[in-house]
Structures are given as structure tokens and as C-alpha cells.
Length: 360
Image (cartoon, rainbow, N blue to C red; front, side, top):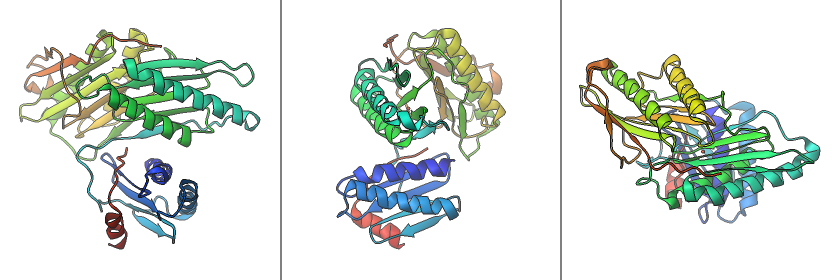
């Protein structure tokens, strides 16, 4: 559940936010606003233990209530369904998926060691080209496969941003899915994935859709879906398996769309994955929403009503006679054909701000 993901991320993040030990999370697709903080005299381990004890207690009684807070002498967590702090204009959406299956208890130490090796290698090597996949061979416990991908948007995503995103994803996945046989972290700018089953050139069939609560006109919805179809087609045709586009409807609303596959996929499997994503967006009734995403371990499609990427390449235009009769649109490849063998925002505020929040 989304609230569990948000709270788990808070518990993992706050202890390492020195010197304040304070973190906040917000989702722009769900009404979730939450903060967690420890007193500054605690060590990170003590802070983590304090927050974990709160979360464990809340899971037994109140986790899914619309708003709650738990205060102790050393730490506190607060969740509301309405905003009680300012969300930065640039938010970073974080989603995760951990498998239900655990590593065998007898092999857990070795599996966790291999997991740390895999995610460290992914972070180190994916930054240069935006993609990397690797396999850890271990005859005793079995192989572990991993891949990392950064959004192919050179102007908006310099290598330092890719590296930073991968580092956050590495830390998060190692903490959140540490005992699990499979895990994925999706961030705005990157994806990181591992599995004890082969995942290379295999389409992940467990994709998920996320739709905002706000609606758009039929004209905007039609031009967005038409544009998304063009972006998907362009992505499959690009060596980078990425494309982006902007589309303006007759009522002057602009839609921003990206589509991307992990570069281990063949073009055929990329098309399968993105095609499934488009079908899911339509069958899950997301098309009339102001913002939606399809996320799988193999591909992603995203639409927003605000610019979240930078277009730098030549464009192609969608005919005006398409559905919705709207204005023109354009799609663009998001970079070169480089191949090489990731819903919440985290922000830091001054301590006095946290005190005011908790005392409100």
C-alpha cells in the first residue's frame, strides 16, 4: 500500500539526515503528507529503532486511518491526508516494489552480501552511459541479476544527477528490500532493479499504473493519448529506447510525455512492454486524469501537465486531424543510442519548522 511505502521510506531516511534527523514525504498522486523526526542526541541506529517501533505499533491499529500522529520523548511521526507543510515545486516521486518471497534464512547473509555488491556495481557503472546491467555468479546461493537506468534526458539530467539518483536508489533498495528475492526502486530520474531470476530481455509483466485525482477535458485527454502513442512509437525506434514529446490541445493545455525501456530489451520486447503500459493506462481509467504513470521493471510511460524534462532534439509533428482535433504535438528522441552492460518527495526543513508542524 502507498501509505506503507511512504512511512517505510521516512523511517529509513530520517536517521541519516544529519544534523536534523528530519525528513518529510509527500505524494502528488495520492493525498499523503508525512514527517518523521528524532531528537538530535540520538545516534542513527537509535533514531531508526525509535521510528521503527512507532511504525510497528501504528501498523497494528491506525496506519490506514486518514491522519494520525505518534509522539514520544525521542522521536515522532505524523501523517495527514491534507497538506500541513510546503511541498517544493520540484518533487521527486519514489515508488518501490519488493517481492513477497524472502531469501532462505540459511543463505541470507550471503544473499545480502551479493545484493550490496550488485547495487554498488550498478551505481558505479550506470552513470557513464545511463544504463548498466550485471550478474553476480554464486554457485552456493544462486545468481543475482541487476540493472540500473537513468532517464535519457541529457539537458535535464547531467551525469551528476544520474549518479545522485542512483545513489539514493541504491541506499533505499538495500534497506527496503534487503531480505527479498526481488526489488525495484523507481525515482523520477532513474530506476534500479535486482532479482534472483534472470531479468535481462524479459518483459516485467507486473507493471502498475498511478493516476492523479484531478481530471482534464476530453480534448486534452485525447491529444495526450494520441501523443503518448507517438512517443511510444518513437521510443521503440530509437537506439536509446527513449523518447519525449509535448502536445497542445485546442484549449491550449500542454501535455508532457516520456516513454522509456531498459536497454537490455529487444525492440520487440520494448514495444510489448510499452504497448501493455498504454493498454493499462486506458483500462485503469487514467486517460482523463491530469497526470498518470505506468511503471514496470522493463519500461515506463509518464504524462504530466507540467514540464518535467527538457527537449533538446528535433521533433516530429502529430497531424492535427488526430483524435481531439487539437493542436500540433511533437515527440523527440532523448539522446544518443548508448547501450552498456528506479510516490514521494524528501525535503529538509529547519528544526523550528518541524516544531511548529508538530505543535499545530
